Amino acid sequence: MALDKDENGIFQVAIDGPSGAGKSTVAKAVAASLGVEYVDTGAMYRAVAHKMRRLGLSLEDAEGIASMLQGTTVDFVGQRLLLDGEDVTDAIRSGAVAKLASDCSALPAVREKLVAAQRAMGEKKSVVMDGRDIGSNVFPRARHKFYLTAAPEERARRRLAELLAKGEDLSFEQVLDDIKLRDHNDSHRALNPLTRTPDAVEIDSTDMTVEAVLAAITGKIMEDRGAAAQAAVL
Image 1 (cartoon, rainbow, N blue to C red):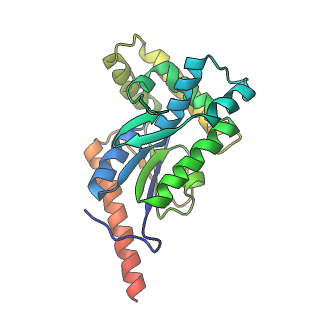
Image 2: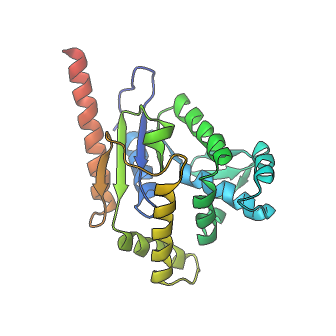
C-alpha cells in the first residue's frame, strides 16, 4: 500500500497511547503495510533506562545522567535497537527497565535528547512512530494521528503474558497495579504528559484483534489522503 508523499516529500504517522495498548505491535504492522520505517520511541527510553541501571545511576543524579547522555547514542537497524552500538532489543524488555523508563522519561534532559533524535529521524524519511507524546510534542503537525487505548485489565493481561513468556514471575495484580501507576505518572508528569490531541482518532483495542486495529488505522489514513488529494484537485 504505497502512499503519495506530502509536500515536503515525507509523512509521519503518530500512534500514542498508554502502556500495554498494543502500540508497538500495531505500529510495526502499519509501517509494513505502508512501506515506511517504524520507530519504537518507547524502546529508546527503555534503552536510556537500561544504561542507567548498568551504571547505577538514580533518577536524582542529574549531573550523572547529563554526563551519561552526552556519550549515549540510540539508533535502529531494521527493527533492532542499538545502544552505543550494542544490540539491546531483548535486554530492555524486563519489567524493571519498563518501570524506570516511565520514570526517566519525565526527566527534561532525557526527553530533550530523545525527542531531538526522534524528530531528526522523522524529518529525513517517512515514519510510523508510537509513544506517549508523538502527536502532541514530537510531531504536532503530523497529518495522521491516532490514540490507541484499552481497558487497564486487558492491558495488564497482555503485559503479563509477555513477561511470563520471558520467564519473569509476576502476578496479574502486580502487573495491573504497575499499569495503573504508569498511567498516572505518564498522564500527570509536568513535561509532555500522555494526552490525546483533539485531532487524533481514538481506537479502543480492548475487544479488537491486531488485524482489526490495523485495518481501522490504514483505512483512515487512506481515507484522509484520498480526501486531501481530491481537495487539492478542486
